[in-house]
Image (cartoon, rainbow, N blue to C red; front, side):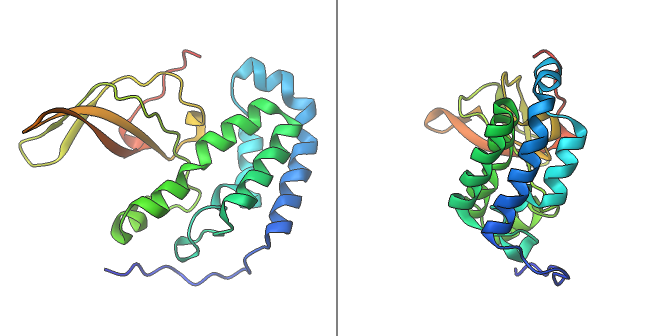
Length: 188
């Protein structure tokens, strides 16, 4: 199956342009550091600025509306943001970095579904928690509570691991769920 995406109507910015956008945003973050610390995550206005600047799309493949500028550009943007506010840089980095994993680990139909909104934000945990069991209809039911997951406040998805039973015994299973399928606890 080949995904059909709408044609891009604006040119893809260069890596230098995207880094310059991040540096401009970073300059506004210094004054917001205290409120970010009090809130425990960056503001909705900062989130909107990141989206408008295309920062969440840096690692998303172009065929899904992303910029596909690569890890080097992504890291330059993350460093620029961290210079403005270390907490904001941290949260951005751990929320938006996993589009690279999705783009490299999953097949085209899965990527098309996950990148339906190219502003893909998916914090992840690697420690298995909770359970994953097959439902009668063949789908999976995942239950668990995943503590400390930077990037969660604006997540479009969550990537985690749960334990499942296999013929060889318990094993961890990687899963990705859309934000409509989980709730974020405000217990930070």
